[in-house]
Length: 448
Image 1 (tube, one colour):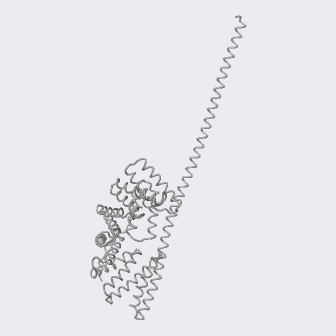
Image 2 (cartoon, one colour; image 1 turned 180 degrees about the vertical axis):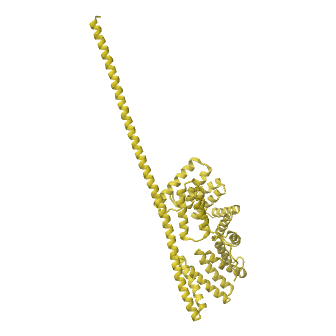
Image 3 (cartoon, one colour; image 1 turned 45 degrees about the vertical axis):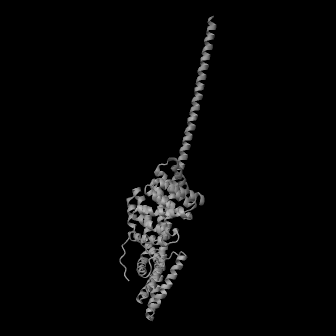
């Protein structure tokens, strides 16, 4: 091969090498460019994701703020309604008191006090009955107090014991229905003393008076005094009632007092007898199923989780069939069952039922602007969802304040709040509600 050919071959090799190197460089550049573009795209996507997350965080913060504002507004509305009702009651009482004082002054001037007292008694009892039938928020306490003057007048004229007892029972019954249990108690004690002397032990009027006195004491939180009377009512009802179902209400009253006194074994016996009556009668319907939910809660508190689960499953099955998936009673039964399953550690089923309960609560809050459920509030306290629990428990207390002044019922609401704030570590709030819990004051002996 001559020198010229060798030179040409070398040039061709150099050209091929140059072309290969150029191809490698172009390919590398293309790959680098592609990777750069991909990195920019991924970076853009990450930026977009961050923006989305930021927007979601802002939205959640706004929702939390709105939820907090809504809770505050709802509780304020409850409190304002209760305050307005109390102010209206005070105005009504002031007007009635002024009118009664004027009428009594005129009657004294004319020597007609006894006749006025009789008219006051009949009018007050009638007026109280009308208010209760219409569910008036104004409590005619002063009218009923005025009726008490008529009873004093009757005693002064030495009316017969049976007539006095009937009048005292009639007036006391109105006080109880209006939540004035402290006013009813001395009247019922006098009435019972007269009836024990005048009536047979199995007389229905005597049993009714003992029943009402038991209610009056229990609603004031005087459980030690209420329980013996309630036992007597159960024994008398057992010996005189023609239907087994008549035992249910006396047993429930006794059960509640025993639970309050922490005599859980005796309370459980009453609970089981009530459940057996419901099972045999098969006619309790909704109320029997609600009693199953309460019985399940009682068994849960006693640590009998397996039995509580079985009882609550029956209640849930009934309410789903009879009331539907989204009914409040279905929700309450499921809430209690979810709690029991969680305590048992029932894994997947417990989590699924918990999610269903939470979703249902949100749904019901949306369709009912003031959805209140103390059981759910307690469940949330146990879960550690304290802020959400606070909403339900404060709303429950405000609702009770609107329709009752009975210490025993209000104390239950306050005790739930004390438990919440203790678990939450808010000792100042817990102490505030501890101080509001009304303690029963022993009744002074009442003479004639």
